[in-house]
Image (cartoon, rainbow, N blue to C red; front, side):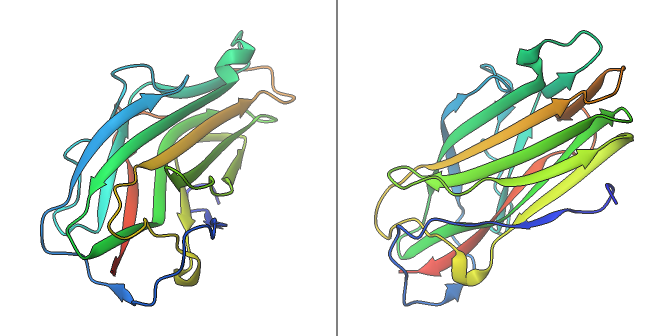
Length: 208
């Protein structure tokens, strides 16, 4: 059912050497984020913000998107049917810790005509490593309302930032809309103007 979370297993790169230490609790020192670049057809300058949005317990951070929308049908152009947004962020990690992205919760709003469909997909990687495989979530029409999708990683498959190195995290999200056999207009969006559609990224922590 589209109102429920769609869970996909992330297939992650193994280029980073495994750690002997066990998964740790979140550090007590406050974590901060610096957005380095925001690029893509779905996030022109000034339309995405992830600064100062780390959870108080350091277990996650939130990205707010605005105007990140893919459209199809109803006169929409081919360029409007596929939108992407890549955010490059530096997570300031306390000494003795490193992190991975354990789960991503995507939420947005969509109107999908009967016969049409929409797709959300994303991948994640640290600068200097290969991108992870994309995790896809497809939403068939008819549908109107808030959609949800989750990317979850098994503990054994987590890819952590190298200990003691400053590596930026890259998050590349994409939305697509396909009119299919429908005659009307369909869209899928991640837009913070709608309530409760923020995207949440959950940390997994390890000691070095």
